[in-house]
Image (tube, rainbow, N blue to C red; front, side):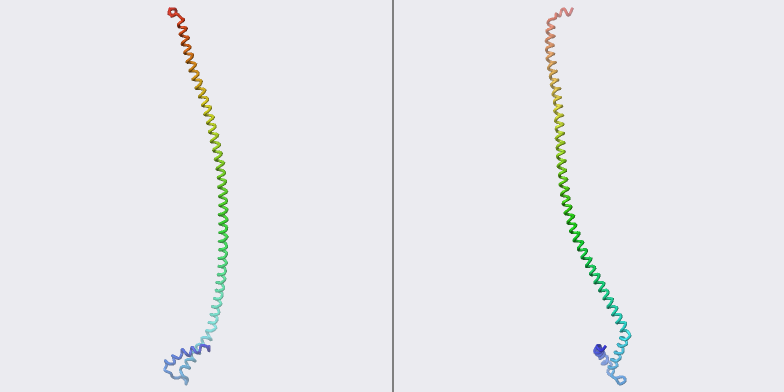
Length: 185
């Protein structure tokens, strides 16, 4: 409290000057002002001091607890942040691994499909060639049948023509040998 007396004196001096001086019970007014102020602050400190000290101590402890709690939360958040960053890095590595795996799998699948397509292409070409050969053979058979039929028809027509010619000659020859007059009678 003694450290506050100069401030009390400094602040009470204007009051003394304003009162115009004077005395009370033989003491100057400014002494009574200081005494009253000391008594006033003494009562306040005596009666309210422990409560204020307790309040300030509790406030300090509360602030300390909150600070510790906040510090713990900050550390937890930093820990969680580090875990999240680690997980993100792991996910990134996993993503890259999956992408690489997918690329390799896609390349294998592409090669497998390409191989299958080539096999299918060869099979289709083989079927087309077989169908072509079958149709060619069938066309040859049909052509041979048609050629045989045509040759047969042509030969038949030729034979019939020759027979007809020979038959006409024979008939003419026989007719010229027959006497028509005898036939008419």
